[in-house]
Length: 213
Image (tube, rainbow, N blue to C red; front, side, top):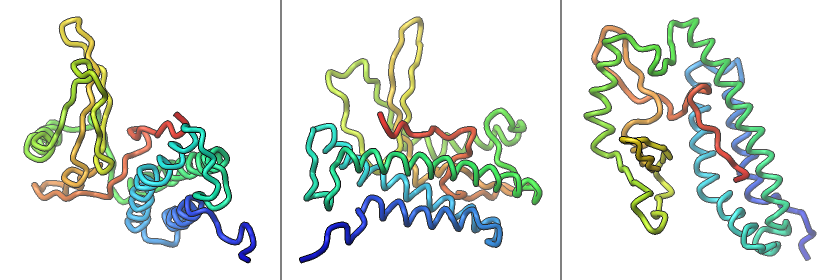
């Protein structure tokens, strides 16, 4: 007979693996750009964790199903509490590491900027990039006009936006193409050459998931 608790829950195992990836991102002995790539891997792994595992456990808990056999001995309620705590802690640590990496990058004359820090030339480039790469694949859904909430794809990213048009308030869900645009674009100085950077958002722009709601 197999003893109880011989194996770690796969959800906790997933998070433990991602913690190891995060450890590499925080290791000062790892080359700087590799640390940034590890942080991107951590971010992508976290996205998949929430899409696949967290959502499944949360649905069980909301439905009032303990699911001990399905979850390897843990109840969905306790497991949800445990992985939520771990995920929030890892998210906070990833933002701390990102802040450190950004400061180190600035020493190498590499800067992560947002829309308030662009020159006119950079703003023109970003506008053209949006028109050519992002806008054609952008999906906008106005929720006010729908009787039921639309089915959203697990593999896509979405923004929920509240818009006011001529005193009329509308709630919009915008789906954006992650594979095409990434979350950051690397553009060489005095050059039209650009390429996607690791798919992570900087701390001051990142929307932290409400993992408990």
